[in-house]
Image 1 (tube, rainbow, N blue to C red):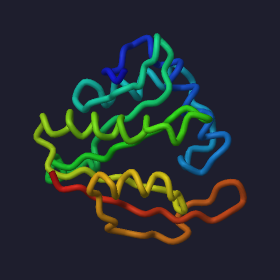
Image 2 (tube, rainbow, N blue to C red):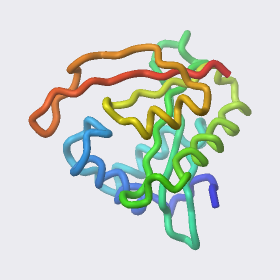
Image 3 (cartoon, helix red, strand yellow):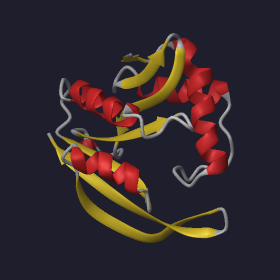
Length: 160
């Protein structure tokens, strides 16, 4: 079941996210995030922006949330979103369902454009975005460095 985040979800969110920090290039963070830091991050975006989790019997398997794109006031109608699915549970439709539900919630706000950055290559993530109508708008070569390799980042955009 997809639902809005609860305060008790921070440890599970932290666990899912820290896997990606320590084992993948999906995020450019390099140090694990503590539960208190994750709680602060959640408070920075929710409830101003939607933050959803995939909850199955009280166990969190993924999350997606929107957040501010840029600080300048003219960007106030643009949001970025992030999506993470627990390792080993990708490819089961959770990611797409979370993004679809997130977009439904975003459409209830004053957000006009949704942007998403993807570390490339990431065929699965790109496929979800493009199936939902996102269009690629940028490609930055070698802008990140993690696990001893240079990484590209692309941006996808959906005008609501």
